[in-house]
Length: 236
Image 1 (tube, helix red, strand yellow):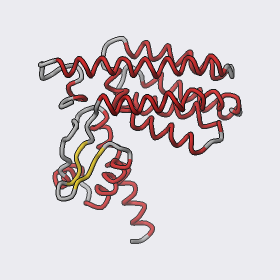
Image 2 (cartoon, one colour; image 1 turned 120 degrees about the vertical axis):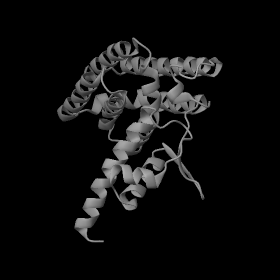
Image 3 (cartoon, one colour; image 1 turned 30 degrees about the vertical axis):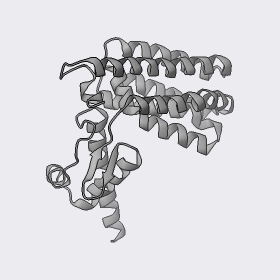
Image 4 (cartoon, helix red, strand yellow; image 1 turned 180 degrees about the vertical axis):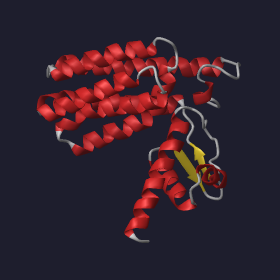
């Protein structure tokens, strides 16, 4: 394959990745839903090469799972997975952000502020976009710590958390609360107040997890087919 063909395939793969990823994150493709590659390639007007590359990336991100002779299916959401993701975030992210705040350059501080404003601008819009901007914001808070492995772990966990962020923000009023919490967090980060920052981040992440636990429990006990979290948590 020539360099030009590689660039074209990669560009198409990126586009397919973004489309399928949004459908998964926003619940349009629910847990255990099969990915029908022939139909999807026809719908998107692409060949199997960029499609397979995109699906492989989505599997690496934990959004798809593959099985021999069955192809790809959407990785189901679960209360156990949410517990694991958020427990890991709690153990890593607050301390990493506090360290990064102390090491942040002016450029780093500008990038974190820009990430906060991008998240604020996305609020009240498409929840898939909000989840992406939320990920960018949280990663921006730890990147200046000059610890590549820690930053990669936080980013990986933030990617894993995106569907749960969308599910968490669906109930009315949650977006306003999240905005206030993010505002307090960025203010403490810019002030290099590590003690306050760690407390705020821990409270923010933990509160999201506690809300999700309630939503999962409610979803399991509900018999309504169109329950508020049904598109995200069905079959759990």
